[in-house]
Length: 258
Length: 258
Image 1 (spheres, helix red, strand yellow):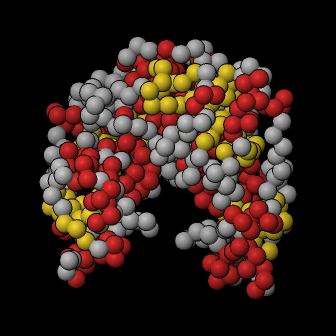
Image 2: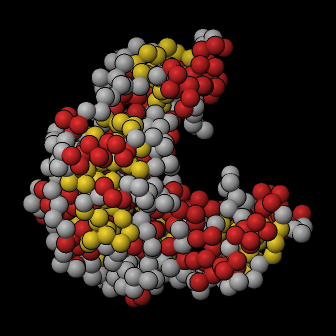
Image 3: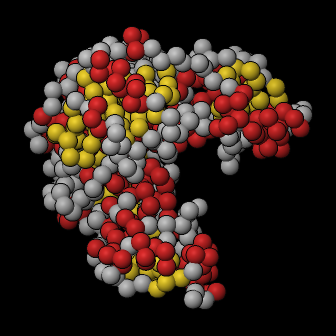
C-alpha cells in the first residue's frame, strides 16, 4: 500500500521545481518503463497494478516491483488512462564537455516549449543516431512527464543538457565547429554542403524561431524547401519537430551517400 | 452579448457528434482565423475580445466580427489561454471522386487517432503540395478543435475525405495507381523507385501501424531507414507525423531531381 506521503511525493514530480529539488522523474507505460530498466539510469521504484502484472508476466519478471491498487495508480498516474505501470527514477547528471561532443552531429534547441515537440525531437534524434542535445535554459524540461512519454524510451539513450546558449556557442565557434541553423529564409538545404562531422544544428522555438542574439553564431543558415505548386498558397512553416526530422534526414542521407 | 443558447451551441461543437449534426466547426487564434477567412470556406460568425480588436486593428478590418467579453470568450474557447478570436465555419463537403485525385500524390491515413498527429500531418502535406488526404472512418475527425489548431490553417487548403479504405483502395488498384505503404520491415526508401504521379502513400496508426486487411493493397512496402550506429540500440519507430514528413520529403526530392 502506498503511504499518503509517498503519493504526495510522486505527484509532486509532475512539477519541474520538485523534479529539480529531488532529481527524480516519472515514467509510465510498458514500452517506456521497459526501455528505462534496460538503460543505465537508476530506478528507485516500480509500481504496477495486478491487472498489468497478469497481462505482462514475461516482462515484470525482469524487474522488481510493488503491486498497488487501481485507485492508487489513478492517484499517482499523470495519464488520463493509466497504463498500469509507473516507475520513479533518478534524473541522470550530464556534464556538458565540448571535447566529448565536438566530433559529432549535435542538436541545439533554442526555446522549444511544447513538451510533445521536445519528446518527438528526442525520439527522432535517436532514430538518426544523434547522441547529444543541448537545450537553452528556457526549453521545456526533458523530464516533464509529457516529454518522457513521447520520447518512447529514446530519452534514456540520449544525453540532454541545459545551458546558457550564447556562451556555449561561443566556445563551439572557437573549436571551428560548423554551426547550422534552421531559419525561414536560409539557403536551400539541397544546395548546401552538409557534413555531420563536428556540426551543430540549431532549431528555434515553434512561435519565434531562433532568437536574434543566437543568429550571429550561425555559419550556415538553412531552409528545407516547400514544394507547393504555388508557394504563396501553401503552409508557411513546419512544426519544429518535423523541420528537425527533415533536416537530420538530409544530413544522414548525404553522409551515408544515399 | 452571447445568448445562453449560442454559448451552448458553440461549446457543443467541441464534440464530433454535434459537428456531424450541425456541419460546423470552431477555429481559434489570429493565424488560423486569418487563413480561414482567406479560404473559400463559409464563415458564419467571428467573435473577438476588445483587447484582441485593439491589438489587431489591421487584421479585423478585413472581416466582420462581434465583440464579446473576456468571460464570454472563456466560455466558448477550447484553449486554456483563449487567444481572443474565435470563428464558427461550415465543414466543407468533399466528394471523393477517383478521377479527380488519381493523377496526384495522395495520402491515405489508416486509423490515426491522435489529433495533434493528424494536424501535423495535414500541415506537412500542405508544405509538400499534397492536395488530397483520404482517412479511414476511425481516423480522428479533421475538424476536432485540436486538429484545426495544429494545422495552422493548412486544413483550409487541403481536401480531407473520410471513407471505408478497403473499397477505396480496391478501386485505386483497378486504376493502376501505385500504392506505397510505410511499414516497419519494408524496402529501404532510398532503394525504391519513387514516382509522385498517380501514387498513394498509406500511413498507419501510431500504435498498430497499417492494419492487416489493408496490407495486401500495398504494391510498394517502404521503410525510412534508421541511422543509429547500432540499430538495435536506437529508437524502434518514428512518430506517425515524422514518418510521413520524411517519406513525403524523399518523394519530392526525387521528383524535383534534387
